[in-house]
Image 1: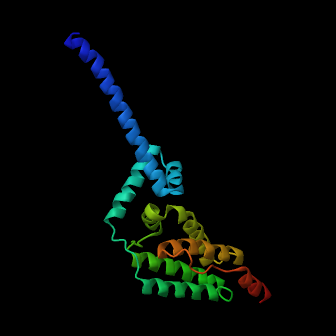
Image 2 (image 1 turned 90 degrees about the vertical axis):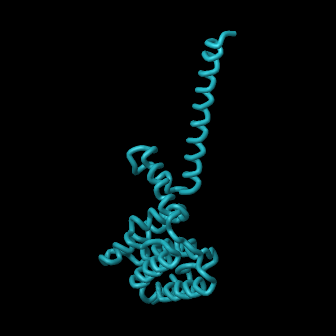
Image 3 (image 1 turned 60 degrees about the vertical axis):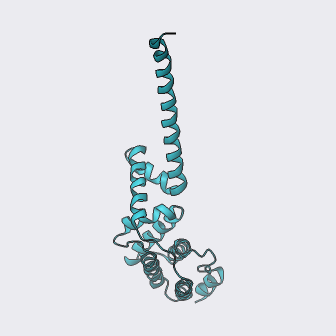
Length: 194
């Protein structure tokens, strides 16, 4: 077989192998982003101009996140935060509006103590999405109710829901899935009786 014939056979095989390798690499990279960001991956893709741009945005979030000094809290700080959260929940029956604002401030302070920048809500979402993509919908829902609350337009039931949503992110940031629950049925009964 001549050299030209060998080249004519080998070059297409190498090109096909390269295309397969690039395709596998792209699928692996996409799967990594989907697993890392969870529902936030789909949300970013749907809100972007293209999947490629959305994935570029998510990779940029990962890079920014690597540059942050995110740290676990010591046990005593976790205990202090848990106690504060429990206090906010206990006051909910008497001051639901104020407690939602307190919950927002407590979550923001916890983010800051963990090393997350807190310079703006949209940036907070982007920074949290890298490790907490599964709870971002909770944070968005709580934030929306919080905004309506500040305008005096949130119902008590919406405020109760906001507390549950804030709690989901709070627990994940704290690293304690067993933080006591939000307003319970007993709390609701006491509130309804008041």
